[in-house]
Image 1 (cartoon, one colour):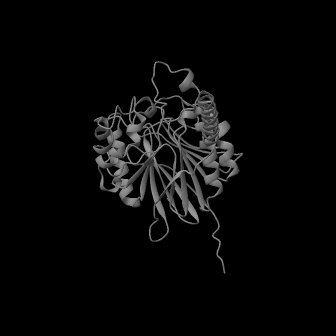
Image 2 (image 1 turned 180 degrees about the vertical axis):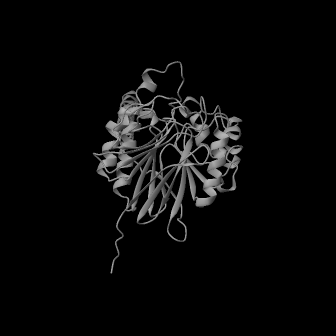
Image 3 (image 1 turned 120 degrees about the vertical axis):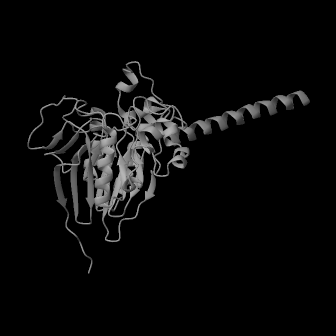
Length: 340
């Protein structure tokens, strides 16, 4: 009888263990397909309700390739505009990201370069494909914020200024060739596996955040080009998966880097303005494809940066070259609505 009781207890224990494991697997399966809210940062506008931002990309080369000269002009323009923050469109550290939180490239390519008083504002940064060739967690680490308080880099997040919301999107994991045609490069995918679930959740997160936004202006920031006449051209994966979400949710601007140029494309089939600011250092590639002149407002195959001044009723975009000369100005407006 005792032996039978022991066997029964053992069978029941195995049965319960099996049920618990099944439940665990179901929960894990459901959680992997569930979208979560993107982390949100509040950034107050000026007293007059406006914000001014400076955008630069593809810059981290220890001051070489005119990075220092671009930084100098950024400081001058930043002071004139009294900028509220800086946006980095990725490829923050060449050629292969950071090796760790103690990599001297952080100081040599960032802290020691962007020294102007006007640039000691918050920097909001996304990752580029070159950043994924290094230690991604190092760039995301709060340790770097302790080294330089203006630094903030996450995979995907939101900056809310009330009149405008900026949706930062991690675009590198969308691109198939980084997984299939590595060309001798090693990528740090440790934070995005399984890839399919990561991308599915990210698209859900972005779509949900855009749908719930009441901001007057919706601006999406990513590293990769969506519309570009530059060397890399259009990134087909984000055109396929991300662009429809932007169109459906009436996004006003998509801002990117990746192509080392300054560019403004005003699409004929969408109100979205496509702005490339990837001239933070190495440029002048001389690789430009034809684009419909009715859409191409600016293509400058050189170094520089852009700014945006945003109010409730208007956005003013300006592109500058490495000498601080204005290359292109463009403005758009929206009607103000008052509740009686």
